[in-house]
Length: 379
Image (cartoon, rainbow, N blue to C red):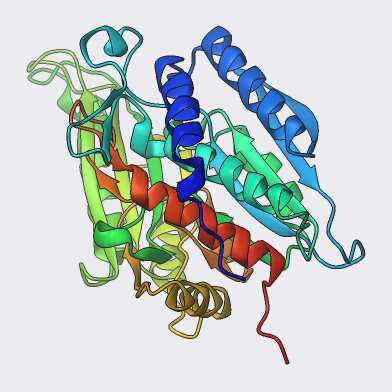
């Protein structure tokens, strides 16, 4: 069935303005509470049963719609309510519909409040036609994705279990291209404890934490495969007190990106296996954040189905791999058919130039509605 979401344009603009102007940066529990209360009300009005999952920065939302075949595996939709730009950004850059009648700007309009509106519109389209999803649907909206989903990932993991497919609503690649693979990422800190001593009089009594750290970094760097498979970046490094003192402490924070699970295993395995080179040195490796690699599968059945439905609407839906990580890294790495980038087309995520296309938002809503009633090719 082909849905026409153009009739919902004014509704889309009204909802988008409301959500964008209700700023909700990560780590602002009260502001996130306001936005999530608005979303809860909207999704309840569209027939969802909504559950709040308590988190450190307020509640995450889990919205569930029954399917016409209630015993079937569910479709998982993944979104987030937190944004990046600081409180007060809307004073300088409020929600604006531009003269072309299509471009909208404002903090979070592209990443990802436009997506949350598109999901609303998809269920509105179904309701107007008296239709229900073929399979049960669960929408998880976490409030900490922009800082790596430190708490939200447990909600996604819980609802990923037994899923038929997972659809992520992050912004697409340029031109509306879906993301069917994501690089894994990890942020790791190495802390070294040495032994301080006078660098001139008693150097032999000391153990340089800085020298130890340098040697340990060399070990990890040596485990990194070709740059196309993994990236290694020393983001910060610190240690020591004075030039005439053997350094007693040192630390480094390292950013890692992985194209494949094999590269991920090699580098993280090297980190986990680090042992002191110097007898009196002690070291600790702390994994600060982590999202597993989701390697692209050209035969992704979910992407193929979405492309087929898009073709029925006269749209050529392409796929590609994202260099960044997101919540779909988890579902993709688990082998669940996954596609991300189902948000509206636009540009400038996390910047003052953030913008999105209303026409694309409406098209994504119609595509989602079509998928929910027919997630599989008819026999």
